[in-house]
Image (tube, rainbow, N blue to C red):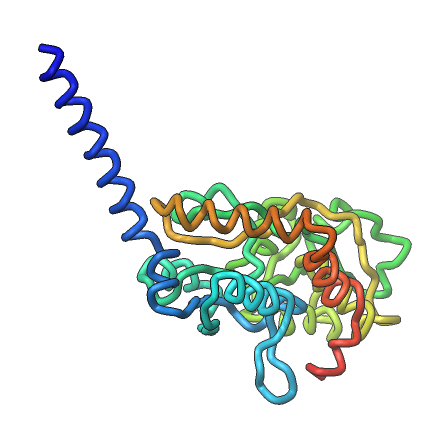
Amino acid sequence: MKKLLVVLMLLFTASLFASDINVWKNSTLNKIVQRGELRVGLDPGYMPFEMKDKKGRIIGYDVDMARKMARDMGVKLKIIPTSFDGIIGGLLSEKFDIIISGMTITQKRNLKVNFATPYVIIGQTILMKKEHKGKIKSYKDLDKKGFVISTRTGVTGEIVARKFFKDAKIITFETEADAVSEVLNGKADAFIYDQPYNVLFMSNKGKGRLVHLDKPLTYEPLGFAIRKGDPDFLNWLNNFMRQIKEDKLLDFHQKLYEKWLVDTNWLKRVQ
């Protein structure tokens, strides 16, 4: 009886070991290493995270992050430009390995994909017409019939706009540039979008023309998205983020933050 129990325990242990090996073999991380290439899906229209410079090259916070990730994996980087409204579908159909595209972690998205530890925390803020200065002090003052709120289609800005504005008219556009232009052109009263974009816009095109209600309406962590059922890849990404955030000698995370979210010198490369 004891011998039988020992045999059963050995078989069970061997089965668990084989299962662990299969998990690793099927892991996206293993496939990336074997392929020698990290494929990243992003939508190059979200300053300062991903955008095209004057020569058509994709640059930004997320691009630098992806390069660092690929270097640490010991592989090449391949950027796959993808429209944001189809980017989760592209991930699930294995067109790329990971989404690094300024994606806000939401419970709805988390039903379809898994997210690694957040790499930036942002929130939604409002840019409004200059003539509203002093009259409009919060989003509540804009939520009235006759007011028009613009934002980009399919992003957190639209979700928040529809949640916070019940009486104002909401209009959406394919790009944030088109949406904020409606305010500049006087066709909309306010534009709601991610805080980093709005801060940068106010330092350039919006200066003297718009007013920034800069108190965030939301708490929005941005994270890398991967396919579900991949613990090895998720473990690597979480350790990657912990390392670059906490390693003061490397100081990569802080330098990246200052380069793209504090300094605005890069604007000269895209205008």
